[in-house]
Image (cartoon, rainbow, N blue to C red; front, side):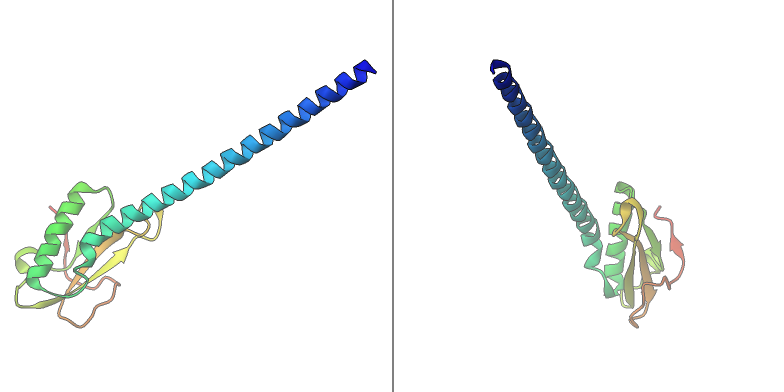
Length: 141
């Protein structure tokens, strides 16, 4: 009878150990989900921060505003790993009195998904599309 009670105590201890291990695994899985959500939130904030400097210039702009946008482009291109291109007139070819339409293309894949990847400037205020119309391409140098 004494051996049977010891066997029951050992069996109970094993069941309690399994229960504690299961709870530990559940807690670790929950922590992993929270960490993943925090990473996604940080990525979203980085995209918004990168794009925010450009979005004020979207639409019809005077040449002087487009020159300012080009300076922002040069700064971002030099300080960011995100691929960024300029399409259309830039620098002294921009006339202060003329209107220009500014559009953006966004990356749709890879590490820079959601980032602006191309700034498209077209002369005139006809409301361009994000298809890539425009003049020459600037290398950013």
